Amino acid sequence: MKSYRIPGAKPIAGHYSPAVESNGFLFISGQVPVDPVTGKIIKGDFEDQFKQALTNVKNLVEAAGGTLEHIVKINIFVNNGEKWYEVNQIYKEFMGKHKPARTVLPVLPLHNGYEVEIEAIADLNKKDN
Image (tube, rainbow, N blue to C red; front, side):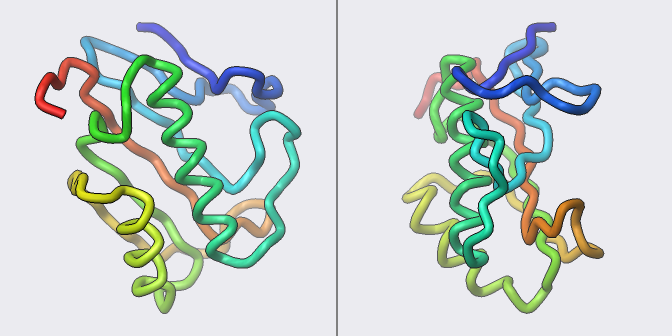
């Protein structure tokens, strides 16, 4: 098992790894709308928060030597189920043609007032990008 962090990121406050590789699979812990370098919470609108969380996922995959195309499963937790259409539009723009398996799940309010949290699994063995 090998752990990964976003290069230049502040130390993690909790008892977990941002991403862990095992047998060529990368398991990415829930990413929230926080700038990993400054540690500042993104206080913008939902789109700003969602894009930051997606960028954190992307940066963790890249830290492990992969790309967005290596993601095979992504789970998106939102604090408002009415955001589904907005989630889909932002996600489609961010991911381009790549369409991994995905779940969008409305949840109770998230920690620190976050509007979104994203976790993912990437197959770093994947050759057919």
